[in-house]
Image (cartoon, rainbow, N blue to C red; front, side):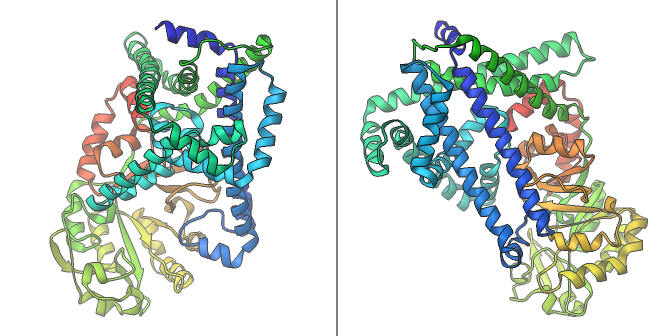
Length: 557
């Protein structure tokens, strides 16, 4: 405890200010990258990046593609520069009189010396340690870096990739820890990359190093989470004493500040003497940075003030593997669970009709190497398809739609286009089913932005959604709702869309933990393979106290 209070005392000498500044620059940098990405893609008349249009951007818009590559390089350079500021700044605070001008001058010199090499090394460090940084330091800019969450979700889909992914990650962590001195040696000692690797490997080879490492890790964990638990306790007391006041946004902002505070404490724990030449100037800057960080975090945290009442959506028309996805038999069973929507997929056939099917290749379900667009509707309906220990026939879209309408079941229809039929698909589908979709309140969504723009000529925006695996841009004004992978959702993304009156649907959280994450963020809808579990989770979440919701945010955001 004495050490912790001593660390607080050292904050006035600049370490806390430095952490605040780095966090704020990183946060602003990510926002500017989104603005620049939006500007570039609008020049190509493609406001969003997805798997289906990246090739088109590269081929037809090489200048835009080049701009995106340059943006990625700048991101790596910014990451390296911020790491350099941290390393040089902490060193100056520990060994000499601190000076902001000198700090920025030296950091820019190092940036000019190593350029992209330093950015690549820092990027690898960030990627490797990001899961731990997310867990320990709930800072605003870290909450927007969700790449590792998406990778984790991907490798967790089957036991083989899960085990293999964990083994690879353990190996990556081991080497990152062994080479943790590489950046400090390059920045502070002007060492080359090879000599830095050699020195770091030798230094981290002793038992004494690993003992200190594990002790430091335990200290960091205890410090970070003790603060979060204190804030959580404050919310528990507030729920009891002031039940009519919603303090979630305030406490989320405190989480963000404590994430930065705990980072500073973790760094200062090992040291006792810090000198600085201008405490007053640092105090004023520190106060300003605290105010800015708190205000921005509070604005994001207001998303947690929204009630938990998402629409429930059964993914591919199944619930708990109760049939072959996207078939009439599964639809009949899943309707009994009363989802608000049943999500299903549609392909166009060789004779310009529509079949209910997800995959673009029939090998997995039907055992034949063919694409839906290569066969007529009659040929497709003859095929036997097998999944989830069930066997049945494929269903044409007209039959599926008729049954849903008869039972007053709304559909969320995904249009599965290909490069060969995107334009024809959208035009034919819109003209054929426009009246039915409007009358029965169905919705459409797609991964293909071109298809979405064509549909907007006939279908009201309120019935159209855009599917995105991740987010690189500012929300597009012409889009009514987004379907986003739950693992890449962040409080900032949900908050921005709430502010712009746009809907956010969390895409396929199937475990209870994943569903709770989506619920805590206050999304407008949840698409899941387990809609019965979702109903139970929603009922429980609607009775969460503010403290319980804050705990979910702490654990999963």
